[in-house]
Amino acid sequence: MTSDESRRLYDRALSVLAGGVNSSVRATMPYPFFVQKGDGGHVVDADGNRYLDYVNGYGPLLYGHSPPEEVQAAVQKHSSQGPMYGAPTEIEVEHAEFVARHVPSVEMLRFVNSGTEATVSAVRLARGYTGRDKIVVMQGGYHGAQESTLVEGEGDHVHPSTRGIPQEFAQHTIPVPFNDTEAIIEVFQEHGDDIAAVLTEPILGNKGIVMPVDGYHETLRDLCDDFGSLLVFDEVITGFRVGGLQCAQGKFGVTPDVTTFGKIIGGGFPVGAIGGRAEIIEQFSPSGPVFQSGTFSGHPVTMAAGHAYLQYAAEHDVYEHVNALGEQLREGLTEICREQAPEYTVVGTDSMFKVLFTRDAPDEFEGHCDAGCTQREDCPRYELCPKTGADVAACDTERWERVFWQQMKEQGVFLTANQYESQFVSYAHTEDDIEETLDAYREAL
Ligand SMILES: *Cc1c(COP(=O)(O)O)cnc(C)c1O
Image (cartoon, rainbow, N blue to C red; front, side, top):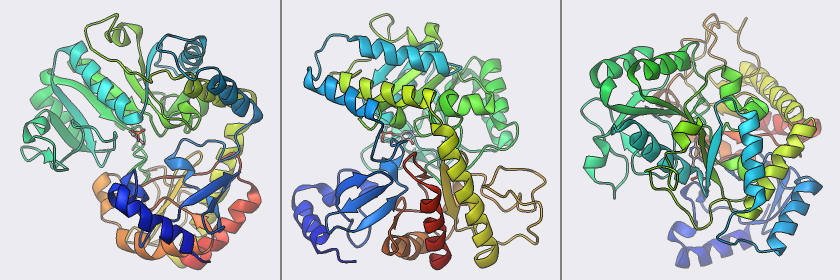
């Protein structure tokens, strides 16, 4: 496998792009491969090497790189007729109607251009609606590159997690460990009347894949109801990925007040959305007092791609296919770990998967979750499998990134570039692809 062309391109990129990339996770060591094109479940790099692709754009590509005919036709039609106008179009209404019809908590939406923009707007909306300032977030949760959620620490020692954000911003954000019922109850006892919203991913999807323990989301729902705070589910990753068209909230049977979307709902184009009950979403300008606006928001090409994506999934076996392959993959990985690396934990659900390099092996494997950790209390691993972002950060992340990822790449399997980010099976993958992938894991683990 040669990489001369990618190295040459990276060298050029370093002169004109900060760190040679436009999103920090892409800067893999020693230099990233540059993609020439996608092809179904594969990507081909600038040197002609082919990889089975489980990155799928970090989440948006439900169909891999060969979307259905209908999607391509919709994109071509809308890009050749505009592509955008600064005036509303029917396709925005159609896409919103579809989302509102399928997602339990959503009556009304506002489309924006990225997941980050969606969570920024959702936080402003929650503050505007409740007249309160504080938001609660999960340690290790990710809501994009936004000022209010890029925080670290706990209790009285919360600070921004990056340079460039005033310390004062962090005063309004309360991070708690995911899955820790006592911690969230305590925070509400102390600050409940000042909390505008609890903002959480239904499943941590950017810090390993961490499923909620039994009852956790119900506790969040009850606390928000008791204190008049909004429960905001960030479904940018899980939306139309987990739980099919109802999203993760449908799978878990917990209804948030507000949901943020991104990734899949743009059909491969830049997108975000904020959805929820009409009385809340109508607080956005121009119908309400919370300012929100965007030149590209509801972009016709994005709307057409997203709508065709979801419409196709509604009419075909898309979720059955990707979820069955996800299960085949996680079952195979569980077997491999059991034999070769019993300390590691296979995580994921539906079409999401990851192997976490946890450090302690359970005493026994009988009765173990066999297709990804579900946080089942009677599993012999229950005490060992990650429950919080900190548990995932305690994994052997260096080995994952510097040794394992490279070995998988050498074998032609493209995984997300660190221990933390989820990987995705796409509709373009086949059972043979999964077997080939398992062989690569068997070699590398
Ligand atoms: C990807 C992601 C975001 C940020 O979306 P961008 O489109 O990258 O701005 C926010 N929240 C979650 C849960 C995500 O996975």
